[in-house]
Image: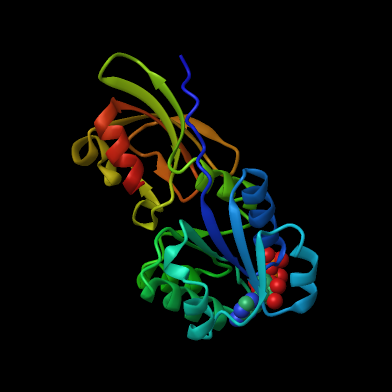
Length: 225
Ligand code: ATP
C-alpha cells in the first residue's frame, strides 16, 4: 500500500533568479508553497513578480536585507547564486549565521563546494547534476518521497541524498546499517544509472536511495540523509 504523505504549505526564500533559481521558484510555487524571491537584477524581479509570492530587488550580501525578511523563519533557503562565488559564499554564510535551517546552495566549482560544505550548508547542488525541479520536489516532500508499509514496524522508503557528509562515500564507508540501522536495497544515480546497494556502490548528493528498515529508524535517517 502506498501512502500519500500530505504536502503541507511551507515558505521558502530563493536568492538568485538565474536558470537554476528560476526553476526552483517555479516548482515550489507549483507545489503550493510560499516563495520569496530575491535578486539584484530588476529585470529578473519584474519577470517573477507574478510568479513568486513576494519579490525583492536586493543584494543578499547585505545583512540588513536578510534581517528585514527574517531569513531565519523560512522552512528553507536556497542560495542560487553560482558564478559570483564571493556573493554565493558570503550570502550562504550570513544566512547560516542567522540560524536559518535547511539551507541549500548552488555550486559551480569544486572549491565552492568545499567552502560551502565547510561553512555548514546543508545541501549543495550542482545544477549540471541536479535539476532545479527535483530540488524543489525534495523540499516539498521533505525527506521521504515514497513510503511503503512492510509490516507494523518495518517499511520501505525512498529518499534523496542531501547531506554532504555522505557525498562520495561507498555504502561500506557510509556504514548505514551499523550506524543508522537502515539497509540500502537499490540506488538511482543522478547520472541516470541504477544498481542494487553493494559495498562498493558510491553514493553522491542527489542520488535516490531505496531502503528498508524499522519505521522509527527510517524517520530518523531521513532527517540525516
Ligand atoms: P544559472 O546558471 O542558474 O542561470 P548563472 O550562474 O548564470 O545562473 P549567477 O551568476 O549564478 O548566474 O546568478 C544567478 C542570479 O543571482 C542572477 O540573476 C544574479 O542577478 C543573482 N545574484 C547575483 N549576486 C546576487 C546578490 N548578491 N544578491 C542577489 N542576487 C544576486
